[in-house]
Length: 354
Image (cartoon, rainbow, N blue to C red; front, side):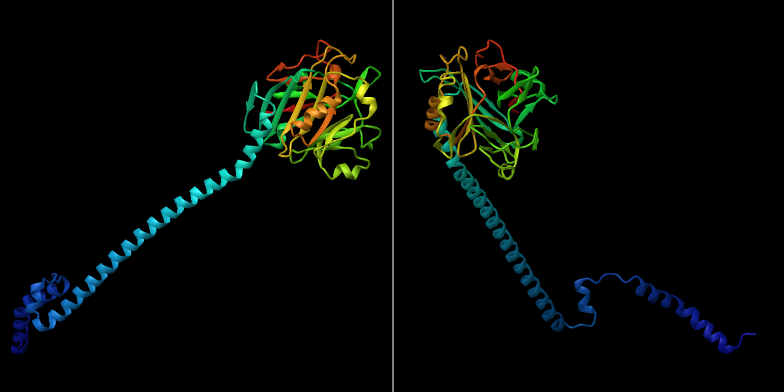
């Protein structure tokens, strides 16, 4: 049985249920307030206005700071770009100025050789071929700039005593140019390199101290021409030769003429010649002189070549094997006129790689 009190409570609960549900909905799903609603929220206009003005002032200050920051970033960016451009110009100018002395020097030494008749250029080397015709002899000069130390090597047969022509060595090794190198000695039908010979940084037949007029000439590990007379192994080892051969005599050392032994002035007096030297910037100069034979009546004397090299500004110069051995190969052709009528097989060759 429902008592009167319970009936009253039930009545009020049923009567208040819609209002309680509305309140819960308002609390859970409160709509956003519009600015005008604040007026009716119980806050007075006097209270709202100062708060609004403060917010507006802060927003205005933030906007001004943002504009100033944006302007500052823009100015900084422009300054950075101008600075970068200026530094790039300075670097380019400095590089050009640094290269200028080298360019001027190269123009000076090249002008003494004349106009090149052939040129080979790659990322490893530059070769310029000139004619040499001072009146008393004819030949060719090949100026070589090694951009990479590996662009020059020495060729030698792996079979002891076996010789080959410079053309054969060039083709076998895929070189762009080549010349004959050191002297040789014949024995038992075979041809062996003369005295101290270095191949791939190792002595082929051990070190032999210089005697009489013999010298050693080759290239070191940095691509510089090294040579001279060496009376002990340590002296040559210090130069770190990667390859090299031996012959006679030295023509120039440190920009000065060396004394040519009387024997080599007349034995033979004139002959086909192959000489190699270097400028002070480490460019190489090779001269190959033509001659009719080895009788001493044609070609150039060593004194003539010595004087010629000196005037051309060469610092160090060495006489390589000559006569019928003299050979100059460039671009798969024989440039000079071998006195034998054909290229002579020799044990060692200096080769150049494109």
